Image 1 (spheres, rainbow, N blue to C red):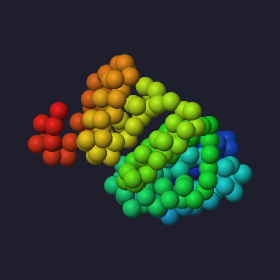
Image 2: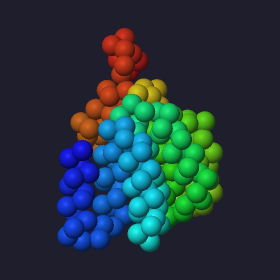
Image 3: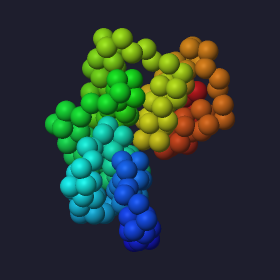
Image 4: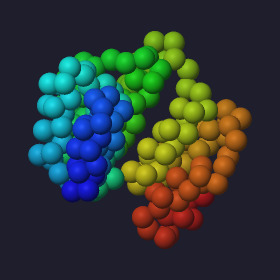
Amino acid sequence: ESAKQWFAKIKESFKPDLHAYAGILFACAQAGLSRDVEDLFTELQTAGLEPSTNTYGAVIRGFRKGGRVDEAARWYGNLKESGVRGEAATSSLEVIEAAIYAGVLEDVPLLLQRMQADGIKMDEAGCRALLEAYGSSFYLEEAILWLEKLEAKGGKLMPSSYNFVLMAVTDPSEAQLW
């Protein structure tokens, strides 16, 4: 409830932009407040703002983080149906992350192919983003794969890189995989 109260105070001071809406949508989704997410999404459209891949992504990540994979998958479906496009590289990566957070892994290879067909190369930042998405969504083998891809691209392996892999470990015996 406090996030909604803070958002109301923000709206008293200035007109919220998409980033402000993304923040409150994430907080409400993480708390499992499906009705509030629906209302806020309608509100942002009524305010003349167009949802972006980032806005949908915030909702999907929030529901995933709150353990509501069913809602994350539903919102991923909404994103796909919306046809929302953003800046090519950012938008493509956000849609791929959304698929991971929604647990729709079968879409990831096709989305990566589309990204490549559009001439967008997976850089170090992209590898880190997918490593984080897989790790925080408890997909250990995929997290390890993206850690290895990051390393192969010459990316600096930081403690957080390994933390994302460790986040994916749900069974102590899995830690022996690497």
